[in-house]
Amino acid sequence: MKQFKDKVVVITGAGSGMGRAYAMAFGQLGAKLALNDFDAKGLNDTLALLQAQGRTTVVSRAFDVSNKEAMYAFASHVQQQLGNAHVIINNAGIEGSTQPTWQTDERDYERVMQINFFGVLYGTKAFLPQLLANNEGAVVNISSVFGLVGTPNSSDYCASKFAVRGFTESLMVELEQSPVSVHLVHPGGIATHIARKASGQAFAKHYLKTSPDAIAQHVIRAIGQKKVKIVFGHGALKTWLGATLLPLRWFNFLAWHELKHTIDLAAYKVLSKRS
Ligand SMILES: NC(=O)c1ccc[n+]([C@@H]2O[C@H](COP(=O)([O-])OP(=O)(O)OC[C@H]3O[C@@H](n4cnc5c(N)ncnc54)[C@H](O)[C@@H]3O)[C@@H](O)[C@H]2O)c1
Image (cartoon, rainbow, N blue to C red; front, top):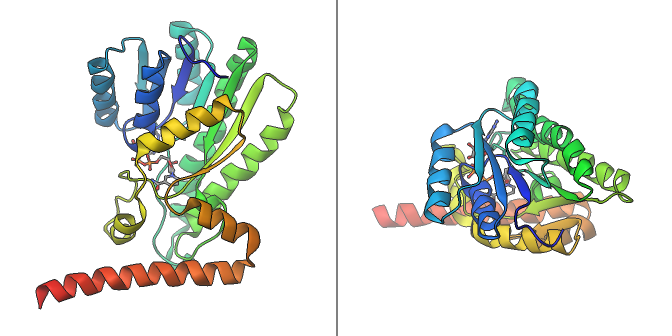
């Protein structure tokens, strides 16, 4: 798909960060938008920004993407209000643990998998029939650089993003001969509010650097070019190269060493200001 004017674009997690940036960017291209987030306030803020931009064709619904029935009900609602969807961007996601596996509760894994993986699965399955009925469309699933390499203290998040990658790569092959393109996005460090836990914020400050608008524009161009694998954002190319070329043990040693260095440096800066 190259042209998005009057096309129906569905975006999950549109109340913040990259989801909001996709909404603003597709809005500017004249798309009709169907937006979700479980944070009703964030979703309303996005709607207000779109209104200020002069966009009116928007439907929205606040629900949890891990609720299968709610996702299918949303798909019916979108179809009734706007017609069949052309693009589904399965973007909603949460951060994982910042602890090693043995300190991370099984319930944390279940919650992260429910949202980051099953949310993507339900969004894809609920909207795919509409894309196929339109005879054109794009499924855009958001993984992460943590879907390229397993890193310490994030095994729940990595597991969920590897699951998105495996699922999406399978779908890509299944739909190869169809009019629907499938895109797998591995963002690097994007400056959003995903790192809500205090323990993740030092990392966020030093790593989440690329603007959400930049990745939204890049992904939209990539959909037009039928680029199936999209690696973009701070540190993403380096991670992709490392994950592709280096043995895992060496890659993790280097990445972890660099991260530890960043945290040490941050701690040093705080301490030196105090003294
Ligand atoms: N920020 C990064 O550096 C980065 C890097 C790689 C991948 N990602 C992925 O990109 C996606 C977007 O994240 P972001 O960085 O914009 O974060 P963000 O926290 O700014 O936005 C995520 C949005 O998803 C919503 N959300 C979370 N759980 C939900 C649920 N169960 N149902 C509906 N909405 C839900 C949140 O309310 C929020 O508005 C996520 O899948 C994230 O894992 C982010």
